[in-house]
Every structure is written in C-alpha cells, then in structure tokens.
Amino acid sequence: MTGSEIRKKFIEYFKASPRNHKEISPAPLVLENDSSTLFTSAGMQPLVPYLLGEPHPLGKRLVNSQPSIRLQDIEEVGDNRHTTFFEMLGNWSLGDYFKEEQLGWILEFFVSELGLSKDKLWISVFEGTPDVPRDEESAGIWKKLGIPDEKIIYYSAAKNWWSMTGTPEEMQVGHIGGPDSEIFYEFTRVEHNPDFGKICHPNCQCGRFLEIGNSVFIQYKKVGENKLDELSQKNVDFGGGLERLAAAVKDDPDIFKTDLFFPTVEVLANITKTTDTYDDNPKPYRIIADHLRAAAFLVGGGAEPSNKLQGYVLRRLIRRAMIQARKLGMGDEWLSNSLPSLLVPYKSTYPSIVDDHTRINDVITTEVDRFRETINLGLSEAKKIDKIDGRKAFDLYQNYGFPFELTEEIFTERGQKIDREQFKMEFEKHKEKSRTTSAGAFKGGLADHSSEVIRLHTATHLLLASLRKVLGEHVVQRGQNITKERSRFDFPHPQKLTEEELKKVEDTINEEAAKDLPVSFKVMPKGEAEKTGAIHAFNEKYADTVKVYTIGPSTRGARSGSPFSREFCGGPHVKNTREIGRVRIKKQEKIGANLIRIYTTVQNG
Image 1 (cartoon, rainbow, N blue to C red):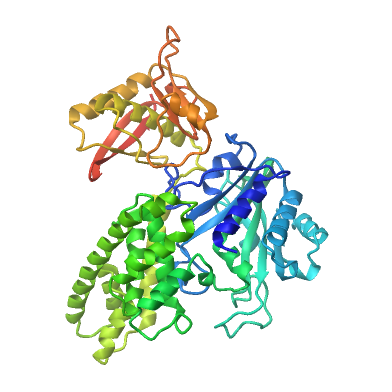
Image 2: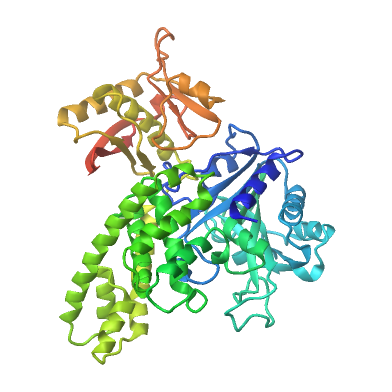
C-alpha cells in the first residue's frame, strides 16, 4: 500500500458516515498569524482558536493531512525513523465526540482499512498526577476493544500528556491540555540493531516499537497555580505520521524503504561514486532524502535561503544534504536527478509543488553553489590553524558552516586529533543560546488571545486597506506575524514608501479607527466570499467554507455605504475599531525584490 493510498484511505474513512468529518485544507508550513513557532509542526497548530471554543466554519468534526516540519530531531535524522519534514494525518472533535468514539474508530481504521494486525499493537495511557486522575477510562475502552492488559502501559505526564507548555505542572495559566493515548506498532524484526529483542517497552528506543498514532483528549484548562478546571468543550486531537504508518503497513521499521523515499534512495545509489550501498551505510542516503524533501516543500511555499528564521533553516537543510552528497562522492547530479523522484508521491495531493520543481531545483542549486564557495573559504581558514582543538573546530562550523567531519579529515591528514567532546560542548552552548533567543523571538501565537494581539490583528486589517488606498490594489498580504509588542506585515511594492506615503497610510488607519467602525464576520462558501470582493492572503489555501471579516461602514450617521475593509480571516478581532487605540507605523524595510515589510504598534487613546 502506497503512502498516497494510506492518506486517501484515512481522509475518506473519517469523511464517511457515521463519522461525517469535513476535510479542511492544510495550513502553510509557515503560519501567517502564529508567531510562536517557525513552522507548522502538527495539524492541530492552526486549529488552536477552535480548540479554545471559537466556532469553526465547517463544524465540529474535521480531518486532513498536514505537511509539517519539526527540527528538534534534526540530529537524529539518519536513523530509520526520524525526519524533519513529514505529513501528519489528523482528525478532530471540537466539543463533539470523545474517548469512546475516537479510540474505536482509530483502531478500526488501523486494523480494517490498513490491515494492521491487532496483535502487533501496543497502547500507552496517562498514569495520572496528584491533580489529574489516572486515565482508566481510556484503558477500559481499549480492553473492551480487545487489547489485552499486558499491552496497555501507563506512562507519566512526560510521555502521555499534551499541552502547549508541557506537563500539568509546567502549563501556563490560561492554556489547555489533557491526557493522551498512543498506539505503537511492534515489528516482526529490526535490522542493524543489536538491542532488538531484548526486554523493553513501547517507549524504548531499541527499534522494536514505533509510535504510529496519538489521540489527545484536551479536557483541562490551567486556571491557577496547581489548579486545573475541566473544559466545558472537551476536544479530541489525533495525529498519525504518514511515513510511520507506511512503514507499519510494510512491517519494515525503515521508513526510508517506503515508496515515499526509496525511489530516491535508488537514484542516489546509482550515482554514488563510492562503494557504500544503502544497506552498508544508510545514513547519508537518509539525510539527503529527508533534507531535500523538506527543502523542496519550503521553497515551494515561498521560502528563500537566508541567514534569518525560516530561510536559515532552509539553508541549513540544503547544506547538510550537500555534505552527505560529498561523502558519497557525488557532484551536482544528486540534486537534479533525485528531486523529481522525491516529488512523485505528491503529484495528486500537492500538484503545485510538483509543477514548480524546475524553480525549486534552481533555488536549491544556487544555494549549493554558494555553499561550495563557503567550503573553499573554510578550507582557506583551516590552513591558517596550526593546532586544532574542539573550540576552533566549532568556530569553523559556526562562522563558515564548515562540517566537523571535513575539519576532522583535514587535520587527521596532518596527524592531529580533535577533541570531539569539546566540540560537542561548544555546540551545546550554542544550541542553548539559540533556544533562549528563540523563546523571546517567538512569543505569542495563535493561542495568544491577549487584548494587545487582538487589537494589533484588527489594526492590520486597517493597515492593508489603507495601503491599498494610498499605493494601489496591487498590495496584498505576503506575510504576517503578530506578537503582543508589534505587528509585522509584508506586501509587494517596488520601493520603500516615502515619508509622505507613510504618514498618509498611518493617518488613514487612525481616521477610520476613530469612526467607531463595527467589526463583524460571516461564514460563507469560498466562491461566494470571493464575489464580495474580500481580499485574502497571497499563496494560501482556503477551505470550501471561509470566514469573512468586515470593518465598517461607519456607525456614525447613515449606515449605508461600502465597508472600509473586507478580508478572509480566522480572527481574533475587536468588536469595534474604537477598541484598537492609536496605530503607529514604527519602521519599514525592503526585504526582497518588490517586497516591503512594515512594523506597527498600538497605543491606548
């Protein structure tokens, strides 16, 4: 069974009666209105407002397959199960069905639709804390469904609890969470792992087990120190990795031997200049296949290699893939030959990525050429070092992107050894510094419904409408990021605005806000919404039914007349523009060819 067939079966299963879910479009890899993270890392991420109680345009039962990127496991990529890019199959209940329906349905899907043996499935459930009871309800449901006691394992909150900020004790006040129940597949055999078959448990790392699905029961809200309240709306959030499910269906623990990867592995094996086959040395093949696929989806979504944020991650993925290609003795053919084979499994689901493969290849090739120059520069710097150590090796890595393996190779030829542990220590210090920086850089997000974020969100609607009035209707949203402190808005324009234009835009925003304009929304079919003239984000997919937010017409005097702003949007918003306060344009930047970025803040009164 191919990955495409598994994806289709999952969506069709949950759309069919009696489950009756509505399919929603996948969110972009870079969420426009979520400043809490660099990338979409799960299907639930763009659904946080609806998990918190906001009505979804398509109802209470949803399903989709969400392209996702997670970077916390990037150093693990190269084993048989970890990736940076993956697809998350997801279904949700927004205050509708709960544990009994969810667990029964997902087991039926795995066994009846995918053909997995029930005898190979193991279950984990939440063991409880002093504040939250042991999840005996889920365990009891699994037993009724035919899972034996010995295959139902209780784990702590570190393993079987979900919230946006950790365990019940770690959760921030106002955040939601709940216990989860994971499903693990037990493989018949595991190759290349001497630990396989020893006494272990589903969450160990010997390779015997693979998590293939997780049902999260979001039923609590943190209301105070060590105090959780039950939500009136209890939600289900299921996620299952497509690549892992494909491996389980094959009963082969190596996800890179599924149809989603192996055609690319075979292409690489045919062009390697070494004697290393995939079976002999799978790590470089896996890293190239994973990183190249992630890079292709990022470029297809509009990302460009750079030294900041998403562009930096894209650059790192391309360069890490190139290093592995060098290890296999490959020239440039690894990219142009393997990229088409990587994209074939996505032709029917993500046709725009496949159709855009020539441009994607050009963007990645340009970065490869640039990195080749960087390597040459790093080689020159390495020649200036008389005595190497771990710290100097890390300096080469940090300043020139020069891989440790290349540094080690160069100095081994000189008869010098590098203290790898010292290098790792410097690397860990760098990672900790990056984590601290990121914690400040990505505050807020979709879960942040603070008054500052809501005011800035609505003010950004006024900004877009004002820009279109001053500059012209070519202005559309190309990117947006909001925190409590400011709003960042990207739009196409050939040059930075003059001081007069900036002032006119700011004055227009504040003049309209002062009119006490009502802010309202209507849920309607996408085609009908487009006919109203509502504008929407550049290059973003929308569901068949959307929310359209309207600002105006003025409540002063006659109520007739056109609204000042009408946009596709999911919220959150103020009820009336007088709640916004005064909007200030703080600065503008030219961030690319024909692309301008404006930062705004709001002040009271």
